[in-house]
Amino acid sequence: MAEWVEACAVDDVDEEDVIRFDHGGRTFAIYRSPDDRFFATDGFCTHEKAHLADGLVMDEIIECPKHNGRFNYKTGQAKGAPVCVNLKTYAVKVAAGKVMIEID
Amino acid sequence: MATTAKTKRDYSLVGESTRRAIETGLASAEWYHTDVSRKTMKELMQRSDGPAIRDTIIWIAAILGSAAGIIWFWGTWWVVPFLVVYGVLYGSSSDSRWHECGHGTAFRTRWMNDVVYQIASFMVMRNPVTWRWSHARHHTDTIIVGRDAEIAVMRPPDLLKAGLAFTGILDFRYSLPALVRQALGRLSDDEKSYVPEMEQAKAVTAARWHVAIYVATIALAIALRSWLPLALIGLPRLYGTWHMVMTGLLQHIGLADNVVDHRLNTRTVYMNPISRFIYWNMNYHVEHHMFPMVPYHALPRLHELIKHDLPVANPSIWHAYREVWPVLLRQLRYEDYYLKRELPPTARPYREEFHGVDMSAAAE
Ligand code: FES
Image (cartoon, rainbow over all chains, first blue to last red; front, side):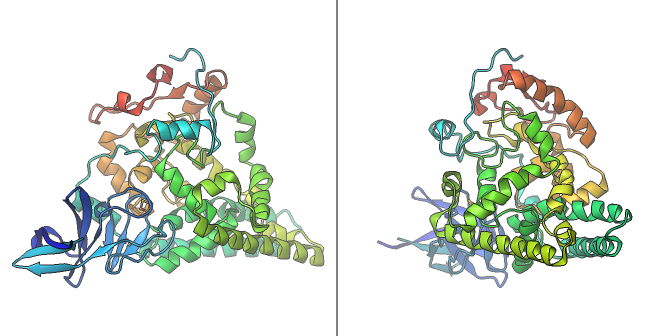
């Protein structure tokens, strides 16, 4: 069943950046876009096991630190080789200065 | 020091060494990284179009200028200096453009990376699809025998082959037939091991485009009864490839294999500004492997930042070859022998038990 989980405080993530959030044996990536909105995806790249939180956020793109594969972190869409499989995204809401993500 | 050769390396990507690398956890392993704060790394990773646009304008101008010189002076001895310049730009600098744009780090704008990547792939005679994947594998499993598709000099070293590489003959011997094979729709087992199925058709299409351009060039040369079209397209990969080989071989040659620390298996070499332009700063190769997100123009800054944790860089290309030559000779008899890069006292030590290397075979 889906549940809302507190991932971090709003201030934990810089604008146009990403942090890692681990919960229940899983790892997620929490993004703050340049227009100050929050997004969440699976934490590992779909190509190999690399933490996207070590990557680079540019506009709405997260670039993986291992082979520079790119995803749109808002939609999870893989943008071409070496990433071919889309990234799972999660619903996000901000409440009382906290970033919450909905985990199934 | 080394005694006897214990290991027979199997460089196929679907063989005994592959099985062993997967079994022992060497494949897709966690690699050593020097500590760099997230804030600093973010600054270093930042992309901009400016430096690569500037360099690409110079690059294209130099290519077109030297090509014009070749056409103008064709049939006279004056053509030679233009061939030398054009050859290196076509046959060598294409490698670094292919590399940087393949990583997508040269330009901030994606399509600019893609356009230069496609052009450079053609010049350097590489299938843009298969090589993108082989290079991803090279970064995952750098110099892991049985996994890395881009090990330039295997052990024991084939010195004749390494020497011939400077002439580009081997690329004509291997790359061209590979392109033709791929254009006919056939990928090798090794290629299939690193190119995902959904990408294999693209590899065939790309190979067909490359072959079509070569066929058109040959047809033009026959129609004109002149070698000129081939001197401009295709043959520079023969006569201009030496700089790519001279710089590229140094990346890993003679160093440890089957380790998960780029400080042990990769080399940084200080180079002159012209070579660095041709090579797009890939002489900072340890830095590049440790942090492939950092664009070429930021590598010197990264080097300054982490050099306390890296082996001392070779001061010149000449120095690096002088250092590695005796190691190669020794490897002819003892293939386990290699050059162990010394760390400065400020560096975090190698975790030898973790790397699983037999240090008894190392030259200090
Ligand atoms: S692991 Fe992310 S692109 Fe390869």
